[in-house]
Image 1 (cartoon, chains in turn yellow, purple):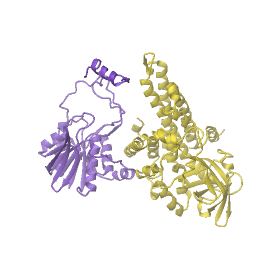
Image 2 (tube, rainbow over the protein chains, first blue to last red):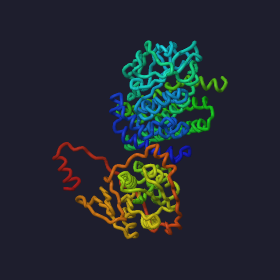
Image 3 (tube, rainbow over the protein chains, first blue to last red):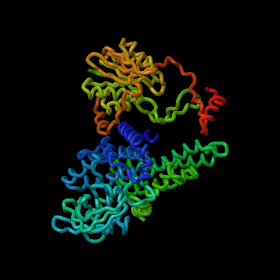
Image 4 (cartoon, each protein chain N blue to C red):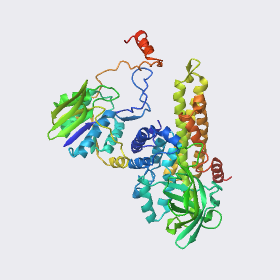
Length: 382
Length: 249
């Protein structure tokens, strides 16, 4: 139903149809096996790229479909989430957080070299901010990069990095200057650079199909031209990047809610208890109605924030509110969906079981629920 | 060589349709719409003929309201060159559609017309045949293979008990069956390019067709619900049940 909203035009609907078919034919038949295996074939990046799906949200000059049409991005992201695996969606989409700093602030040479290869699905891009010593406290990150002639000598660790094992290009936040936000920079670090290694995939509660890793830098010498944006100006870049990431997390959370609701609705219609279907009980009907209401309200607010973003408004406060509202809604809806499924919802192999686990990261990643509230507090003058 | 491909906007094949409470038809409010799957196959076949060099231009046509432009744009994204929509708000029926197609055919003079054997909404399986008769053209229906050679087209037809190959003189009408090909995806760059391809609109008056429905639907009912199956323990039990309960052997 969401594709009939006026936020979406004919082009969006056509691209949505292509994305949906890609998910139905190429991902859904395999997703359970890929989730259990903890990975998915690398060729999927190429297939998504060939359809133009990876390029959505990235500039045309470097092989993308354009970075200005936010609702095109939302349409594609919504459909990719219909694969029912947050992990696959996050891994396939890790370029959406890794690449924008490069095409926004990287050198022309870097853009030409890196962006087309990633958008064509040949290379994988990842973003590395969080460290074992702290995630939310970006201004105090510890990974050190010291300028030595034409190189930066990088020492430190990163963790919880999506596409951390398989990525080729890492957009890494490092400390080049004094402590605090004014000493942070972004560096492009390529796989294979001596002194740079990755852990095996980390075992996680959810997002199983995603390769999440720790990164280790030990006297890793990174060419100085790999600096993204101004030295010690990385904090601003990171914060700018977060706005779109947070909007996309809203979309993920809303789709998690939508899928949980759809699954619960279908199950409740089929499942018989005490001689009637579960929807024959007022308690279940009301629960489903409340789920439907919550997901619509959350989605509409996200769309509204996206429309403001599209118009060029500063939406730091609103996107933080939308993220918290959407993830809280998904928390409740995935809980309720499992409750309606009963024992079956506790079993591996049902979609609601996976949604319940995958959802747990959404109020944590891209800015925790608590940090979002602090951002909002500052914006409303508290 | 020019190919004309008529297409239809229908309820998406993945949607579980619901009958309206007053049994007057299927509820179309807020339902996802798409190109009829047999029409997708027709577009794909035309695009393949173009890629093979046998065809130089593909024109897609539909009859319907403005919303059907979305399906025309999809066809353009799949590889058609230009599109025509014959405007009507009526729920057009096969004979009226065939008459409109005849008017477009006369205007465009294509060498080949490829269309789906039926649309999944009405399942009429009439438009292609009616149009061929009105235009006085040879027809090869239910095609599973199409070969264009010179001024002839060879059509392999799926018929009861096997395959039948017929040869038609161009211009001719071909209706597509399910196994003719597997339609491609509309890639995003092609969707963007399709926005710039021409889409013309003709009024009902311009084609000289009255789209007022001539067939009246009296009642639409959902199929009877299927009862749950059972798992039998042995072949003997199966035979026993088929004989005594189902009474089919």
